[in-house]
Length: 389
Image (cartoon, rainbow, N blue to C red; front, side, top):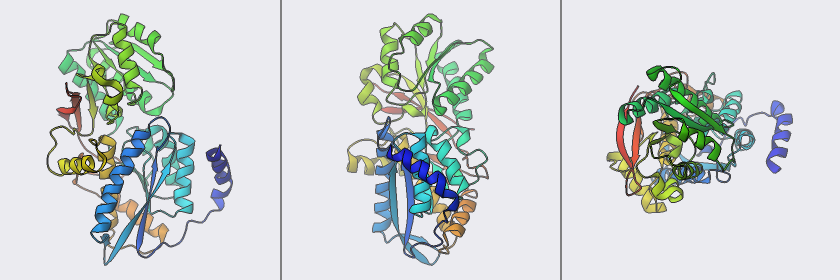
């Protein structure tokens, strides 16, 4: 209720708000619009944990040097409760009250799409680490992402199940009320039917957010003759779907998407998910170089292997700081500095992230590769195959 009242109040006062004209001479403030409660709190936790490690390292080394000045970092974490309306309210608060230079998040598309509109309207740079839906950045010059897009991920999954599982018929189960799975399900269906012809997706079943019983849809899928089941759902829903499918007699492959990639998945799913594959942003098992260094630091501090959300958050923050440093110096005028950062983000080339190399152009979307991982017998996410544009 508090969030809703906050939204109503802001809707009345935002047109009259004046963005703070200046900010602290010694501190750079970055806002985080993340889900610390709600359906996917592990996503918010991963984001915050990765951010805390990076902030600690930079501040301990003296701060972030931009031009002739060095700044300490202040990170402001706001809980969007995994809700679209809360993500909007959070974005407004960070921009108009806290006076942040830029915002990291939201993560999932259901929150990132509406929050992106708020950030763009208020001319504040926003980088979503994990939102793969095209609408997040579409016609929004101030909004960026650190991940690939669903129009790329859908065909990657369709091609993979065709080549690796020899699938000629596919079934899809997805949440029709959520932007991310709905969009990705449609991209997968279009790509699969381009390969195998119209009608080769023999079951295209839906449910609604918060549903727990998928038996009716899965019964149809089991009877459809599909060779593979594609379900682009979040880590808290996948175990229910997988276990119910197996109980109904499904013994064929199940393919997932990057929303499977939480460290929480195997705690919830256990043996039922072993052997399945999903498309995602990086593979923790067998990682090398800077990626392994990040994994080791995170695991040492927090006691578990970081998921793709954590890795993408690390990259998103470093992308932001690359743009900040590339301005050559901050003026202290918030409007001017936000504009300068936005312009420099569009010019980032060959950024070496721990989730891969990225190059940006106007449009806010990086050119980068995807990976397919397989869940091993140990429950680890092992690299299986890469797919590049």
